Length: 140
Image (cartoon, rainbow, N blue to C red; front, side, top):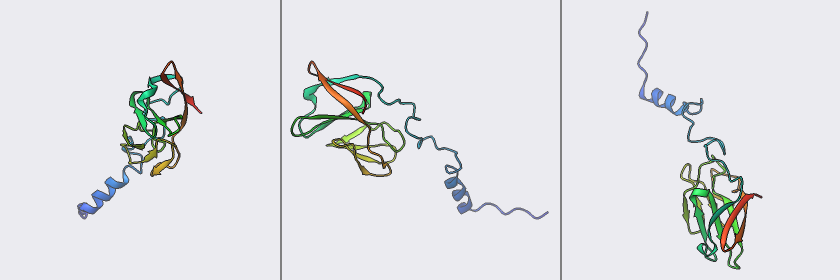
């Protein structure tokens, strides 16, 4: 019986590259909501209204919510779970949210995608001020 040739470096690397496609090691790229963090399902107090400056935004990591304020003072809130793979977004630069998992970027003032791989906008939430405290509600 002839000896089998040893696998080349290229063959080994090609096999390793195809393993995620076969379903092995896909833990970092799961569908939204599969990452164990549930989207906001009820009202949550965020903080004092004056924490968000006009033309700015603030990320509330613990609540997975981002709130922005327009120049006219109107507040908007969005879920900060990335729409690509459900990762919690943990970085806000100015009014740009940056997902740590695959680099998607979103506009915190509109929820729109600024950089793929995400293609769907962030989910809008209600936001109200009660006794000077911002309260985010269910998705709209």
